[in-house]
Amino acid sequence: MSLLRAANSGHLVLTALVLLQAGLAAPRFDALVLAAIREGAFPGAALAVGTADSMLHVRGYGRLTWSPRSAPVRADSTLYDLASLTKVIATTTAIMVLVDRRAVVLDSPVVAYLPEFRGRGTGLITVRQLLTHTSGLRADLPIDTIRGATSPAALQQLVYRETPRVPPGTKVIYSDVNAVLLGEIVQRTGGAPLDDFTAREVTGPLSLTQTRFRPPRDALARTAPTGVWRGHAIAGVVNDPTGWKLGGVSGNAGLFGSAVDVAAFARFILREGRAPDGRRLVRAETIRAFTARQAYFGGATEGRGLGWQTVPTGEQVSSAGTRFGPRSFGHTGWTGTSLWIDPDRGVFVVLLTNRAFAPRSRQSFTVLKRLRGALADAAAAAVDDQ
Image (tube, rainbow, N blue to C red; front, side, top):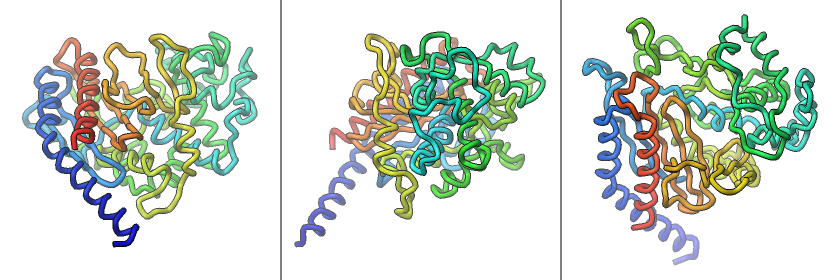
């Protein structure tokens, strides 16, 4: 047997063993998600667990709302407000593409791309610091300020007037302001608004057919709602106030997608920048640099990559669980979404929920955090125990 045939044979055997173990773990995955639904954390969820080459477990659970008459969740077609997963799927990946093309330089000052960003102390802030959330900018604009902005352009001007609250590079402050600025950098350097650039350079080449900003009206019936207005469920409108005021397209939020699509994106990351057809969209070294821990200030603080969160997560109950390795990275979203990847095991976990929609549990966020960690542990076990 040739070395190539032997290697391929070994890979097939390993894949088969992992798939077998994942099949044995399926009841564990199901029990965890269904228990969270019974606890009232969310009415439905979509779960996808897999590797670079295969899907180990994919399933939809529950319904779009608490009503037994609402549509059941499907992992391949139910759309979720991805919330801050927008930061990694759209904004960060767009910046990766632009870094590879040398249109963006990570250690250049932000003002080099956004001349309007000239407040006191902003000249020291770099693109890298926006990505690592070490710019010193505050988490977000006050909600009354956002609501009071008369137009998307007016809100954008308020973002440009922001100044650092602590010296850049000294502390992680997870900030939507950082992501809004990154979205504008994409538009200035990529020659198209963030939604168009993402469709052309990321979701299109990866065949993420369910993933987009501002979902069309004919998709609303299969979109999980994240709010209630005058007794009616609201779906298809970004839940984030900043993203909403900016017209549904922002670097921090606004993307909608399915669990199967987010899983395909995770496989792209695990394949270090290659599309399903083998075409390279981003250099492998760029993927590795962006997903590696770049900032960590010790103790109970969180680690940050470029756009990505890394371990440790700084949480009392980590959304990455207890078994994912030290190079693991991921992100979560306020509406109840998450993606975590362990590159050493080569496994990912996608969980999409609409926790923001009328939870029946007083501690829905706590239940969700426990679930995220438990699913990550179960995925790690499915790989480790083969």
